[in-house]
Image (tube, rainbow, N blue to C red):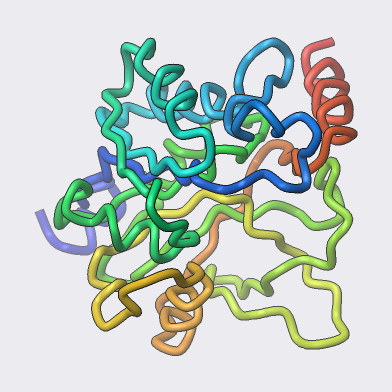
Length: 250
């Protein structure tokens, strides 16, 4: 099989592991997060992190590494009840490392192959096929160092920002220019190569450092969600997300 044919038929090895970012303090969700970590806040009777882990399982991911910091014992106990995917814990009780630092800390558990990154509060209604399945099929390590799931800024539920990225017809992403509303917002879902974390700081840093490096190399790509993304960033946004789900099934 030629390399060109392999790309068309999904010949690249698909990621089977995910890093689930669940260590944040959830300050914007107070008072709900005074006694419960944000990933355990429920939307439609199910914890946010379980919505994400269910999507990971449905996409065939076999293992998820979850980082913990705030109210870590409660989150670990909650995760111990899951059967699939298999859960490993990356402990950040001693120091909150932010998104990039948290992933770097967990690299020994993630392995040497590309992996998914899933925000534990990422929340979306899938189209067909499901977003994680589409991303795995779209992944091309020869052209990409990172593939981000992006959603429409204009139609996102509960999101009142001005977007993150521009995307060209080939899928290359660029940062939003200053004083401009960008058409796409990062939805907290990505596929990354471990090599992106070489020569990164040893402590806390943002994933934006990784994204900007990939942009400079013209190897940051995006895939638009064929569905509906919801930003569940405040107690009020929970009701908006639940209403959007009801609309989608009626």
